[in-house]
Image 1 (cartoon, rainbow, N blue to C red):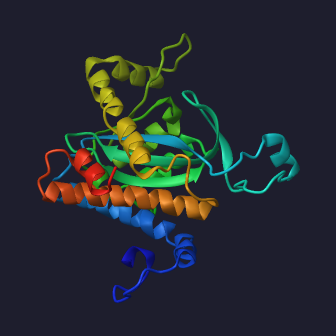
Image 2 (cartoon, rainbow, N blue to C red):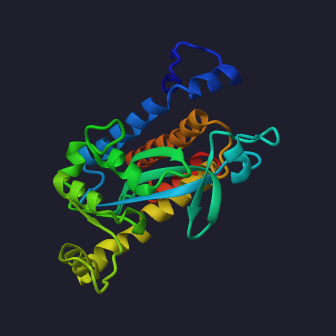
Length: 271
């Protein structure tokens, strides 16, 4: 109730329209709460941020798709199309019309979201990375986390020289798959050498067992692919609420000393 901006003294459940109106205005607040809870996990030594992982996933929109030819002409051919959604491409899923969930998580024994955000599907990962990581931004990692982190593992979508440099300024190294070519610069060759080293491979392997299954787990539990609503503000609110609830349930499970937080979460929400 408080997360929706409602008084705890209210003795009845608000109507659907009231919740829908509130959903459009609380996404920024939810994003800040996700970051705050992620920081709390670190401050309580529940997770070790030595190696972090970042990734994104495409979320299909609700209803019919808006084809690019009609979109370019400004024509909405039928009702039920989410006109806020956009086209995005994934090498594993192809072209998807909808939105994108971006997330940074821990990679140690307890894997939990530390910060997250939602954009339209056409936003590239390297564009969102600065907002996710910079401590001064609304959704960025806290300085307590960035000072304790040594590495951030990511897929090739984050292979951007400016991101390598900004990460080093914050005190950690961005590790992405990077290939060696004939004309590769000396600066990039150093990145290649580290990625191909036994240490680099051991660090990068954390991504496959952390952020990838975590995102799929959250999508499965809360059934947010396709998203259950239309409009950017509504989608952002409901998806970030799912991440926030997941964090809360993980924290509760840990405090109750559950052996398997993931299994406990599915049981608590009736999956």
